[in-house]
Length: 116
Image 1 (cartoon, rainbow, N blue to C red):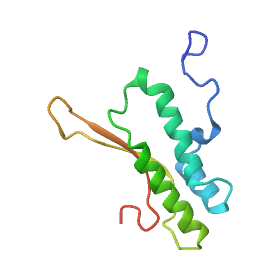
Image 2 (cartoon, one colour; image 1 turned 135 degrees about the horizontal axis):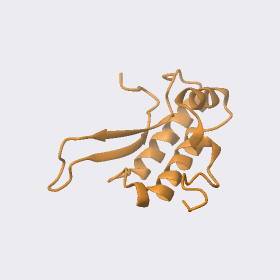
Image 3 (cartoon, rainbow, N blue to C red; image 1 turned 45 degrees about the vertical axis):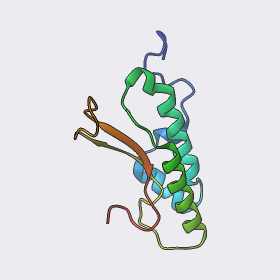
């Protein structure tokens, strides 16, 4: 972010500007992989989280593992949930440790189920 561009959008990866529907369509069409999407979003979190402090915890390893699982399942021709592989951020307001009021995780939806 800079004075001339306070939005911090300079050099923004186009993958992080897509809607969930657009991501899902590109995943199904084979235009992108879940790993690519997840890496793009993790990179963006790394770029701006120091200023925004939106995420207290980011499970990059878990997110990438889930993304690779989705990509492998898709490559094997498995039937997947329509949003499988779309990165999402989850947050809770329940204390998980002393002085930690929220815990945010960044994950990719798994191949076998998406919340169901």
